[in-house]
Image (tube, rainbow, N blue to C red; front, side, top):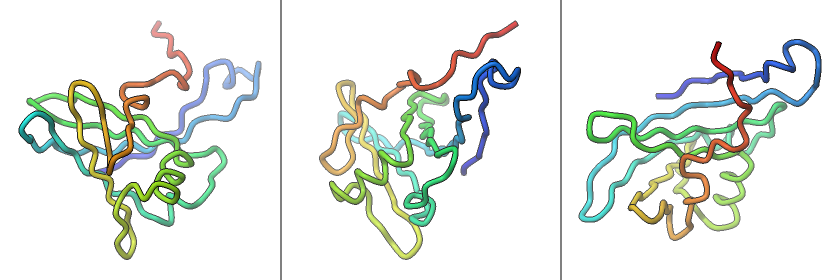
Length: 131
């Protein structure tokens, strides 16, 4: 399952500044438990992964575990594409790249590469003020 969302900074909507909006695709997976970790697989169309968009795309990979949304990986399309091309992260079939992410307490990995820096990392997102 995936959903596209276009996110604008509130200041931008008022015309005060012009940073690019975010294009976000949320993808969900259910965790499969392993001995000391769990795995969640996400499919991304290769054509989407290789195509530069303006604004560029960010993925939010959400993991359902223990009856709740427990983990979030936030990745830019370009970062994920570079990992796939340069480090052979993900397995490509005819149309998709499948990314099996392994989660432990200390790390998130996919085919030997650490993605811990993307785990619950919302730092590139604008602050959303609730009124």
